[in-house]
Length: 149
Ligand SMILES: N[C@@H](CCC(=O)N[C@@H](CS)C(=O)NCC(=O)O)C(=O)O
Image (tube, rainbow, N blue to C red):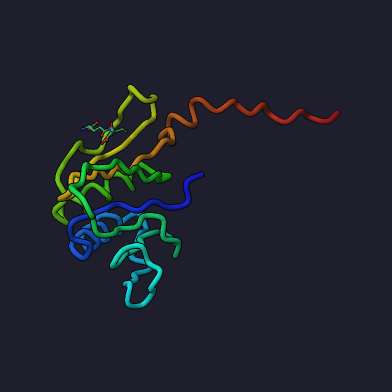
């Protein structure tokens, strides 16, 4: 199970701002931010950790080389969270890379939206759950309780 990952970006402050705004609707915020002045053993001059419920799982740090975009997908429970992410991401200035909708080539309920940041990193929010209507239809019917004689 992946605990966290760190993306190299050319401007940590700017990318932190847009990611925080884009991911706010799904509960993400900046949880931690460190500089090497504060923590001498830090492998980079600075780093910022974003996450939900106080757990930073997506870190940003300065790139040392030209960046070739990495793909990161965050899972949510409801399709409306995918929609809200996409709206916030576009408003924050991230580039459209595929609006909210099904990507049935993965599976019938793969509902996702994609954006790209200034370094070419691809950020996706995905919901794997069947919509409530479909979930009801595919759930086994409960049989009526037997009457006691
Ligand atoms: N524009 C495409 C984006 C699809 C996409 O980025 N898919 C991911 C996998 S879910 C991918 O291939 N990422 C590879 C990468 O960005 O390196 C869409 O809207 O479906």
